[in-house]
Image (cartoon, rainbow over all chains, first blue to last red; front, side, top):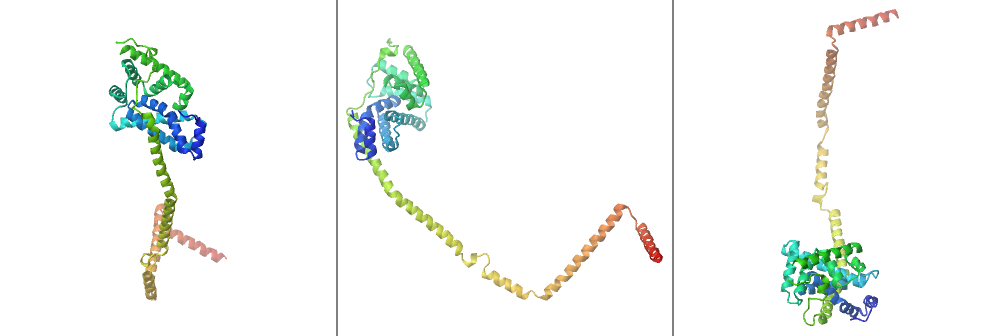
Length: 182
Length: 154
């Protein structure tokens, strides 16, 4: 983990002399958090890897213009989220499958994923999460697994804190109902 | 069927995993791609001024070409060429007095036509006002007589 603060890394990057060094530190600092965030959205490791790399390349291109009035980490999360959702939309278009079937396909990926080593109840939980609408799924994962603050989530998803709280509440209810029924 | 109906019973452990050494090698792989992007971008940035200069020259050259083609238009495309002028001079030379005289009867006939039209209008007026020829003649005679009497009194 990098010992530098975001502010120091951004200054180094913008000054130019240590641009590559600074960016490598940013990757090291955030790669795991972003990877797991993406992985929970697209499920497959290969897809997550592609999306994560594309996310960092976009960050590399845009970091010069990054305004420090928002946190680097919320900005990174926003890019990763948008990249993941765009990927799912493109997948739907490419394969000509109705949107509901994307979740169905993700469930199949989950069951056949060689990089999934959870037990039966964890698999059931992941399946329950995949039944949620896209936005609820994002909110649930970010709150439950990443333990993110609602204020940060609000900046990433551009949604009010109240709406996020309601969304999380509905998601928990639906998941518990699924867990009881199946 | 298991009894894990509550989220709190399941816990928050990550059920996914990644290939061995994935996160260790990832920064290098991403940096390689970023550097390639940078090279491509700097190549475009180097070429950009040259390309814009070339585009500007092409634009100026095209403008100049059109301007020259308008100014220096060949004779056969000019609105009045030398042939037109020669033709006009030819007709001017042979347009003599006889041709002018030939036009006169045409003017005469035009005048006659105008008189005929006027007469026709008078006839139409008399018919519309229901004035017959005899009444008109009698009135004219009476008027003539009155004028003659006036002259005698004077």
